[in-house]
Length: 125
Ligand SMILES: [Zn+2]
Image 1 (spheres, rainbow, N blue to C red):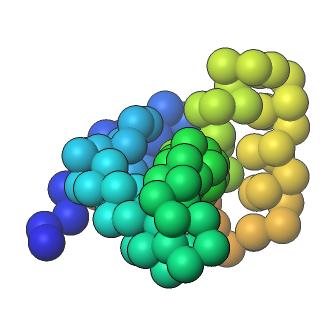
Image 2 (cartoon, helix red, strand yellow):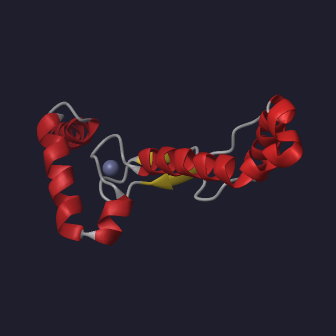
Image 3 (cartoon, helix red, strand yellow):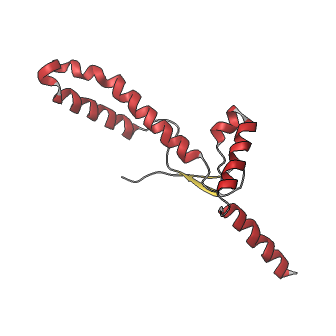
């Protein structure tokens, strides 16, 4: 199965980003949820008969929470630590997080890029 990615740029450091996860569950996720629920229901059939399919909302909920955390992880910029989800909630906190991230990652490509751009400008003069 081909994984679809969304191309975008980091709002803060303009690094090209690729998002692997969409905000919502895709149809392939829904198929997986149904197959998994049927599998669980079949495994529990001797005890629950077909009441096992009632576990669908539970499986759905687990899928959604896993997907959400993956999506949020994916959304965070690996170069500068900018997290749009935090930015929407609390701008100050988002800025603080970026500052902390850059403190912890002094070798971030964000710095390297600005450095190489500087030296390129100098050599051209
Ligand atoms: Zn960034």
